[in-house]
Image (cartoon, rainbow, N blue to C red; front, side, top):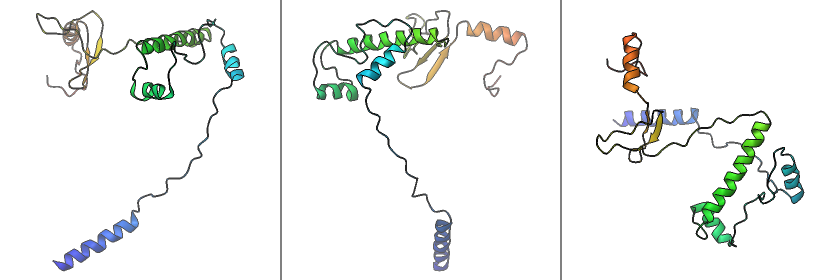
Length: 176
């Protein structure tokens, strides 16, 4: 038994020598980007060909003064400094998003508009089934975190495909 233990230890030491873990992952230089100056912000704003309202500022300016601590609480933990701050911030972001989309379309780029995913579907109180609005619905079940897709007329489409002799399984390994 001692011999086997010694052999095992010698073999593990040889393996450890051959397969050394990497301890040096290289170094990368960290470069600090200076915040944009007023001149750079104006130059950036002038590059837009779509009109930008004068009331829309380059950086968000809340309607009430906030402290640095309140700002950090908002950025890190999403705690509003005062009631309505989140709505003001969202309105400012939405306004810039609208301008950016309009600029992209003016430049010939097109956005792919995708509706937000619903966390829970609406259920029919009588049947308990998800309500079908004649369009695919993607939602994430809040309890299981499973993403599910409900397709309109899924059973009818599947029956038609089966009548034509087509494979209706998604992965091909489902039971018939």
